[in-house]
Amino acid sequence: MNEYKHSELKSLLTDLMCERQGSYMIEELFQHFPSVSELAEASEQQLVQVKGIGVGKARQLLAMLKLARALTAPVQDPYTIRNPQDVFSLLEADLRHLQQEYFVCLFLNTKNHLISREILSKGSLNASIVHPREVFRAAIKRASASIVCVHNHPSTDPSPSPVDIEITKRLVAAGEIIGIDILDHIIIGGHRFYSLKEKGHM
Image 1 (spheres, rainbow, N blue to C red):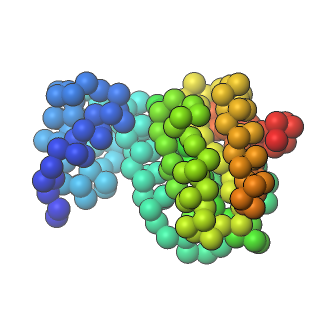
Image 2 (cartoon, helix red, strand yellow):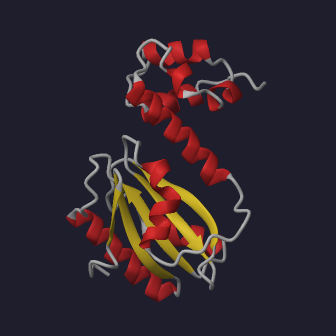
């Protein structure tokens, strides 16, 4: 098994779990799961045995690990995005437990088949974090014909903020210039979603 050799993963988990540097809980987690593979295969029941990790944090950690696996795994069979429900069905289970906002892009071909998906930012969504340059650079790299943007609201309320709407309009405008369409921006909150396209924001 690959043993942890550096502090990068520990620091990353500290940030993602909203813990302080040197957190006792993170140290305990590493004591229980000394390798990446062991942590990746941990169950909820095993995680709650770690001091300081309750059911909520265990599910949050599992969701992070699942999302990481999903976003790095190659797409085997073409997944077609026909409507907002298809997007919600694809990502809802991965995003709804996360305690920070994650901005994910789904890159599609001319038939709306999913080519790739990628996390482009995490943390509070704002114009400085989600920049059209980064979104379209990733799209061009994958020869995408169109993009669906997705992010989560940890509050479980999927209603868009003024910033969400502003960012969406900036991305749509940039896409029109570059020639890559932004088909929709979906916000996932808990078990619900909000389509900015369907609601007339784009």
